[in-house]
Length: 564
Image 1 (cartoon, rainbow, N blue to C red):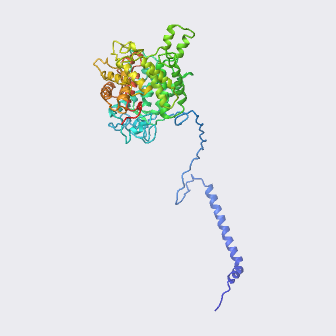
Image 2: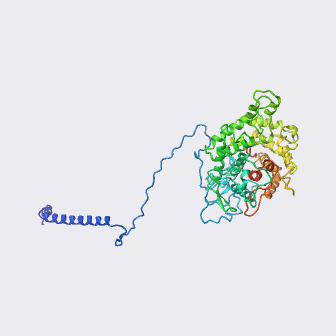
Image 3: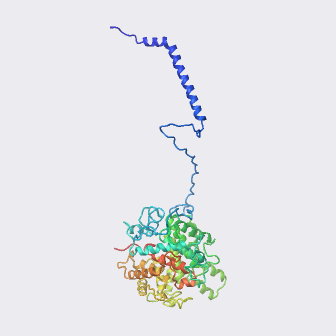
């Protein structure tokens, strides 16, 4: 057998390697030179050369602009006393003109038979009461019927709306909100004095015979804001209200933000909002708006002005004539009265110091209740004082006086007494609200007596319209819904609320302006005695009626859960 030496191939390669190596090196050098020449030619040839043709199986990607690296967001630590979820440090600003190009806004959007407040859930319009995937909360819930309290979401499991809420009432709220958007001033406020600038001169909303003024702009702006906040819309809402009259979209968050910013800038160092001297209607409403803005959004941007307003309201409360504790509220603050008569013991001064009325007291109680529900610090003594004053002003058979028990059942006089019928049960409704939201005692015998009185004076629209009283209708709706409505813990409910609710809805909807594509469309132009007396006109009327129609979901029941 012949055996081949494994070293022979190596010896042979060694003998032949000089020529082989030289040949390989020569070819490599040639290829490198040709490659360099080709690359140089490609780099130097301009792309606009007509003779240049690029052939590639994979087209070159488009050039990408360099991305600017933004600085990291620095969040300030949450103060130890801050309550509520911190959403943002500053309000979100939206462009004023948010209308997409070439969009027909002359037609209503969405399902007209939907129970949702804003029936189109698209990104440019609306969902139910500011919620849903594009709504205020962004939590996917069908509707956040209760801005406060824990029983709200439980109430609507499966998307079930509160009893009494209808397509008609929700539509009335929606077009009422659109009317308010249409008449908001560029600076974010609402004012009867500037209505002529917002209205169609051919058919204005305001009555030129009424003397318009700007004394109550802080209160009216707050009242309008409460309509949006009461429906669950805060400054972050990215949904739109489509105004087919003006063919314009109104970004809800922008409307709310500008109104709140206007209020915030008006606030004085002591926490009040009125320009010259504190006027407690203005102060109570502004406190309520600021508190609900904080409570609904959790944004601490609104917390400080809201807490400062609460502090002012508590300081403005009158002292009890007993010498200890708090009492009610009146038009002027306690501080102003004390400063006016400092160092005197005049009986007239003491009378003025203790002077309170049921109307202003109720607004202040509601403002402090909103603040408490929003997580702000509220002294319980303020509620106790309000209840003590309310008992002092309570007469027999469920009647309450404007100033004291002697005036229970009497008429609260005003400049338009001859044009409107006064409803004595107005004070009964106010008394119910004070006791309901400040004392939370569903077994209080006064509540049933007052409810009976109110049920005997249901809302009606007389031929002369002298029966209209939006103020009465709002507070009586709130009182009866709490005491006798579907969420009441009382075993038998609806005895008073059901007939009242039907009459209220019929009256309120009948008075809303139904003009097609007009400046008045959606507003409540027909006046009552208080809209006329203040000169606030349809701004007051529209806001009060929107709030009345939000009674089904605005507050949780103050008496607690329904009893089994």
